Length: 282
Length: 250
Ligand SMILES: Nc1ncnc2c1ncn2[C@@H]1O[C@H](COP(=O)(O)OP(=O)(O)OP(=O)(O)O)[C@@H](O)[C@H]1O
Ligand SMILES: [Mg+2]
Image (cartoon, chains in turn brown, blue):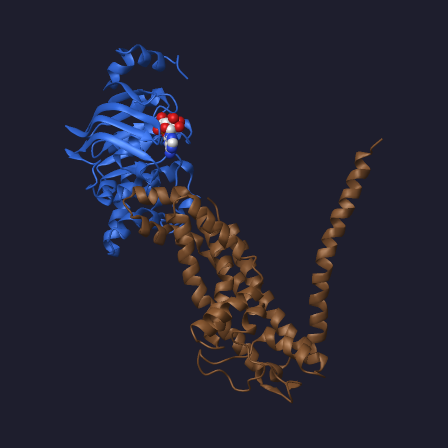
């Protein structure tokens, strides 16, 4: 005799177990990094250049470098991604080509970041001769986060009710004016969410910047977009594996700053999204 | 005087023949009702007049639709001008998620009216003509989504009136409203009639009888009978019309 009550209990147990298997490691990572990294954080650590072969001093150039890279990536990816999303939702006919393009974009989001790094190196560093520079790195990161921005923007645009478009058009408003005045304003929160998620991803990745921009050690800040720069994820990699005898505190401090940066961006995205959900009434 | 005249109007959705040789004449400053069973092409006919069918893939039309004597089906028709002149009220009240004020001035603003005093006048006039001014004049800046269904539908009519149309196309405008609200919207339609030509699609036979001057009965894409409402409802010429209005059709 099968006992449905017991079956349910067993199923529940396994569901709980797998949830814990996911949640516990993530929680542990955060806890350990906070525990070991927080003591390293002080004004000096955040505002000074590395010293003694990066075993002491601060990580200021890496923070600035990451800031430049992320800004550059978004400057490039947001307009292109948004225009692509508008084209795909509002203008493209639903045919085979459109469906292939949409499928390609979804798949691009799953391409390993090191492949983007190699691609960026071949295209921007070598072919366009930008060299290893903030420009090359930003463009590479921008291309990497394009799929995220396009897919979330497409979702945001598609969630604007068709009736809004219909009414607007029926009032003698042109298609482009309808998109500008009704569709885009109502899609902004969704687009913003996608953009911030993209930002977080761009800030955290090492592989795409490895060949395209990242400097091992650069005491002075970059002066133009054609300069190399340090960046947080690469710096963390360097002091963890390439430089011997770095104090654990410095490594975990760097990890803490990076984690805080990425998590706070994701938090902002979550807050925007939930606020928007509450406000939405149609 | 005829506002809209259709001659041998045909429409296909890809292979599907949705309107078949429709000949009709819609009079100015009168209410014309279009009745008929579901799927017979009432909405399709309405959407020919403001060319909203253009957005459907694979639509083909043929024949003539004259509005004030001008054929609107040819490629030279300016759709923006046409849609300003021939406006539409939809089945579901659908205000934008904006304030009451911004809803009403939406079209006007985009069409280039920017002076605040002018827009204020338009808002007052439009709300007065749908009998909402007294109710809403103190909360013009609150969200239109907070209004009742009936108020929303009136607001949608006001939003349309603000762009100064000449023809109002109404596709089952009362189907989401309760009987009292329906009666009040019908009252409003009678008031609006002196300034606009109104064409209303309705499933509600009593509504057609109460509110309209002329009535057209459609069946499977054909306009079976068209004439004075009083005649259609008392002495229909076609057997199918009679069967429909006496309730022997689905
Ligand atoms: N976009 C479309 N593509 C293909 N066929 C369509 C389309 N829109 C409507 N039709 C078909 O055309 C016919 C007429 O549709 P229409 O919406 O005009 O009917 P209606 O009389 O307004 O019906 P209802 O009373 O249910 O609103 C229907 O058979 C419908 O299936
Ligand atoms: Mg219909």
